[in-house]
Image (cartoon, rainbow, N blue to C red; front, side, top):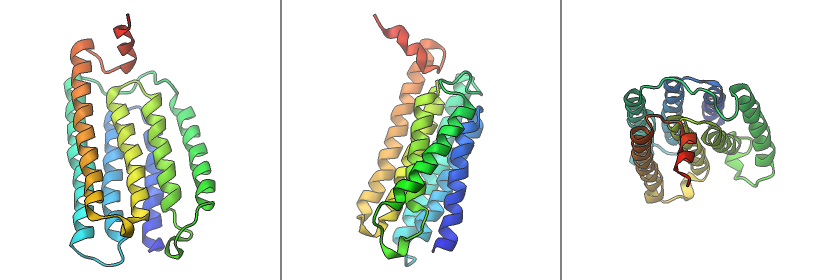
Length: 213
């Protein structure tokens, strides 16, 4: 399994750095969509046996993460008339350095955790921790609301990878519930984006400080 899963996880990690280093919103959305498609493949590959359950989870993850949500974000980007993340709270190169530190910490921390023999030496846990931290970095260091939604997606992708490491112990309804929670969360964020853009004519969340008395 490692020979197939680990190369896909390496691509996930490379996409993390891409998300940290790009200033174009469309590229960030495309990177998040690529992660979603890869996670769909991983959801099918980590199962020991092929059946309706892994295929349904894989199809749901790839469809929601790789197609539906990116289309909604691109539509929001077009409606807002913005294309780039300008003047982030933390620059793109420092963000990538933070991502490298997060990856190193994730690799070291994953080695201290007990894992089942079949996952010994796998990148599932390091990739999950690194992706969660990458999403947190994007979520907290970018000004545009759409980029922050991409950060939320990346963070949830890390949680999804963590779920894959214990997939056999997770009930089917819990797995579907994760996807539904993500879907509802994105709709809520879409409403927030719409209201921010309508009230402030901008998706720069730092302007929310104008609401202070």
